[in-house]
Length: 68
Image (cartoon, rainbow, N blue to C red; front, side, top):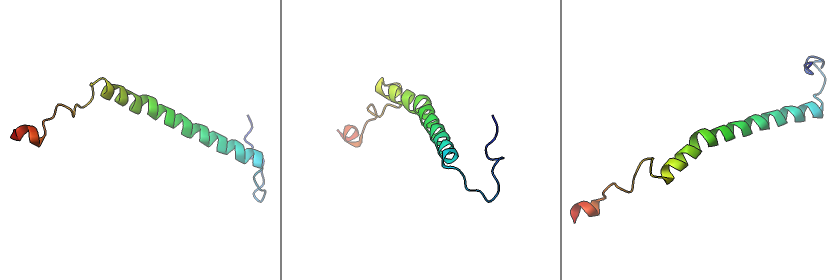
């Protein structure tokens, strides 16, 4: 595919179609990063916490349990 930016002159304004295509590509990259973060970090953490595999804060004794 030919690079459309090479065919433009220096004083020409960027066509709206090319600008929209670039913005759509940026949005797709952002969406891909969010999905990757969700699948690789947040989802396993949520499942681990749900099934008790993660850090267990429930079993930590608090100050009232130590005194009584």
